[in-house]
Image (cartoon, rainbow, N blue to C red; front, side, top):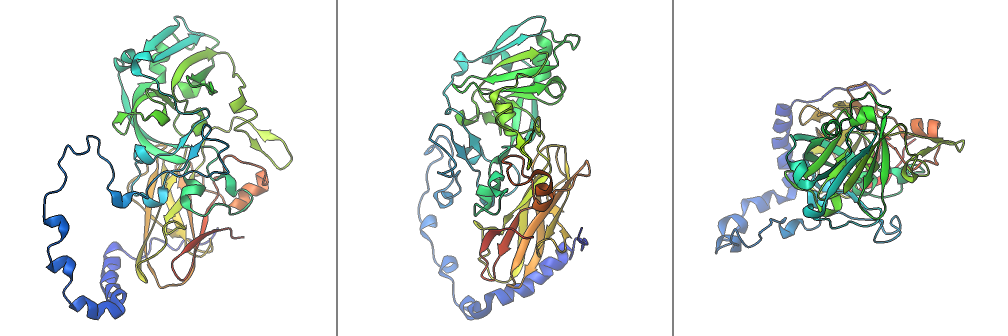
Length: 424
C-alpha cells in the first residue's frame, strides 16, 4: 500500500493560496477586469420586470439552465424500452441526497401505474395469521425515516474487462441515495404473528408488476433493518421507484429492493428464483458462480473532475470531490490519489459517515496543469478497504458482471479534459 501523505494544507492556507492564485487565473484578463462589467453596471433583463408567479408551475421543476442534469441510458445495454436502466447524473450532483427526478431506475417489465386504493400487501406462509394490508392500513403503523443508498449489483459491471464507458454517470450511475419513510418489515411480520418459533427462516418477497420479480431474504435481515417504504425524500414514491410501496433492504443489492411489493411469504428456505440463480450471481474464472452475494462492499468514485465534468477554470485551486458508500455500515475514511495509486492523500468527509448511506468527500488542492490519474479509495467501519481491479480479478477473473467495487481511474489531461482509463 502506498504511503499516505496526510490531509495536506489547512483550509485557511488553501483560501490564502486562492487569493494569490486568483490573480494568476486572471492573467491576460487583468486589464479586462479593470473595465466596467456590464453584468454589474447595467440593469439586466431579469431585474427589469416581474418574474413568474409562484403558481406558474404547481410542482416545482429545475430551471432550464440545468436541463442537462438528467438520467441517461445506454441503448446497447437495454434490450428494449420495457427492460430498461437509467443512470443517475452523479457527476453533476453534490451533497448526498439524490433528487427523485434524476435517480437511477431499473425496470424488468416496465413501470406500472398502481393506485393507492387498489394496492394490497399480503403476508402469508409460516405465520399465525395471514394478513392483507391496504395502503391506508400501512399508514396507520408507526413509521421510521432512514437515508440509505440503493446500488444495482451490475453497477460498474461493464468495467470488468477494462475501461468501457466514458463518464462517472455510466460507470457508477446505477445508484441513488434517498431518505425513506416506511414501516419496519419486522413490525408487519409480528402483526401477522411471526414469533421466530416456527420453521420460518426466510421470506420470499414479490412485486406486483408483470415480471413478478421476487427475491429470497434471510429472516435475520428481514427482522433487522428492512422497511416497507411509502415515501422517499419526503414525498410519495415515483412511479418508477415502486409507487405506492416498495421494499428497502439497506446495504444489499438493488434487485432485492422489490418495487410495487405485493406479497411477503415466510418460508423454511429460499425459493431459488431466476433472479437469485441464473441472475445476480458472480461467475468466477473457473466457471463456477458465487451465490448469496447480497452485500454491496465499500466503494467510491471521484465525480469531479471526471469525463463529464472536466476542469474548465484553468490552473490554481481545485476541489476534487466524489462519493463513497458501504453496505457493511459507515464510511470512515476516503483517500485520493493523483498519480494512479502511487501516493495517497486523505480526503475531507463532508460529514461523519452514515450507516449504509452515501458519504461525500472533498480534497482541496492546487492544479498546475499537469496530467493526473485520479483515484479514490474508501474504507468502512469494519476495516474493509476498497480493492484495486487487479485484486478483484485475481479472485474472480474477468467473466463477472456483478459486484465490481474496484478503484476507478480518471486520466485528467493537461487541457483539463478527463478520460476513463485503467492503470496497472
